[in-house]
Image (tube, rainbow, N blue to C red):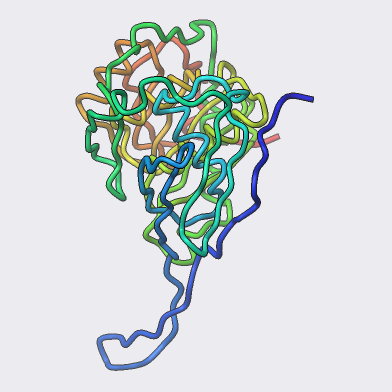
Length: 280
């Protein structure tokens, strides 16, 4: 069995009900996302406060540390304990994080919803990332992924105001689905769960409802995933980074429509699939 740190199990309630009045003064009750702060402490030192739904706080914390390149091995983490009474998570490491103050001194506020930020230079170590050139994604599988997300039960359908991210196999099987107030939190939570499960990204596909920014592309690449899909668009820097690292980027994925931006050699077009699609 692979190593797992000691984890709390502190998933929070994802929505709450509030009373509203419509344009005619009629009262009703609706569900809204239950956003809450989660302050991360590493070895008793305050690191950052994440605004989150709190659905997978342990995985979110692990993924955040991984994607910020503050911890490189899961074995370096002894425990992750969430306490919603004080809106905090305590991370205990085995030997501390070297040069933590220096590495977190420079902060970049990103375009992520919910005040996304990253420590250090966004482009650090990007050129060292090698994504599998032999990976392929069939056009019919792409449609299967888009359809799976559309039909999956979600907080967005119930309450709106959240972003969703999903991890798929190369055959279009949904392996995990996470929603949060910011897409950067959702991708971090999936990264953390992949870390815990020992899941490699080379044969996976990542889907997000949010924009394909440089932050999203870099995080996907750090997870080793060659395919990044979105129902939204991309930014110039997201496109530039994807080209630089050889990631296959697809935007505006709705129904049978999509725009293939980079890494065109990995997508396998299937004649007629965009017109008629029959699932086995």
